[in-house]
Image (cartoon, rainbow, N blue to C red; front, side):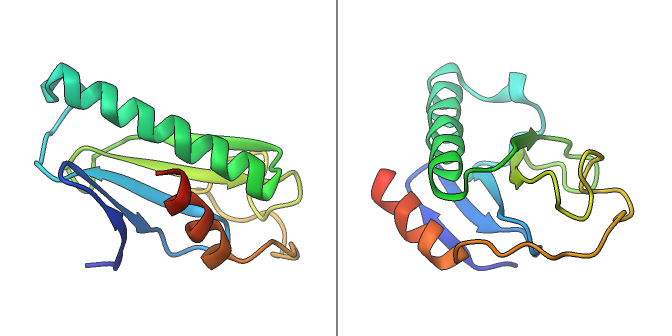
Length: 121
């Protein structure tokens, strides 16, 4: 299991191994679908996504933030939140496709981002 970067009673965040700023937000209880999550927990989840997205925008100044939830490989409710840049290896395609260019981005440190994110959470 990947290291947990942050957690509270109901959620935890892990880094997705990538050169792009990419984290995953999980519910601690394993729900299969969004509809399975109790309403109050769902509202907390959306609030966390909002904070993560805004912190990524403020810290990295990306072209776009991608937020996705699939659960096909891991049927435990979670969100992928990725900062995207017009010159990243995949843009404008998804990060699950083959890269179309080399990674030549100079980005602020991921550790600095996590420190900033923790202060916002």
